[in-house]
Length: 109
Image (cartoon, rainbow, N blue to C red; front, side):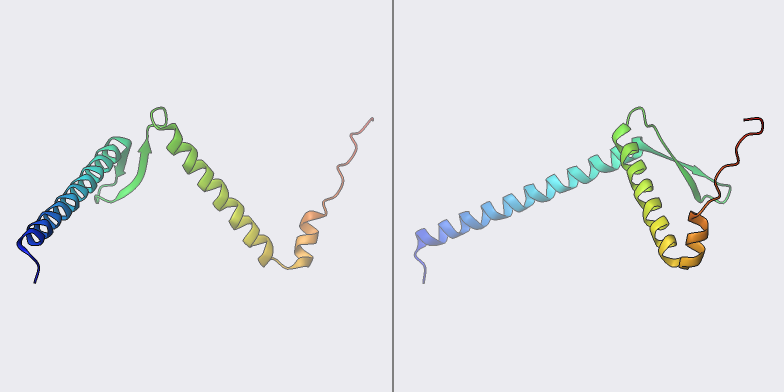
């Protein structure tokens, strides 16, 4: 059986642990609120007559880095899709597409 001094120390340790967990949860909640606030200022939705979100408007003058990330994502996705398309086409067809006729010389040259 723990002595009374050990019991009080254990209670103190438990209280400290609970306090730290509470502070951590409050910090997480604050971070989530901050993200929601930033997102509300960052993004505006265009809504159709039925109330569906059709498109998004982002102010790139204020949020240039986000625009760069979106651009990088779109470029990488387009390159990946092009590579998948090239792999799926038959070789004969690919050769024909790649072998282009030389440009005709201009008349009078």
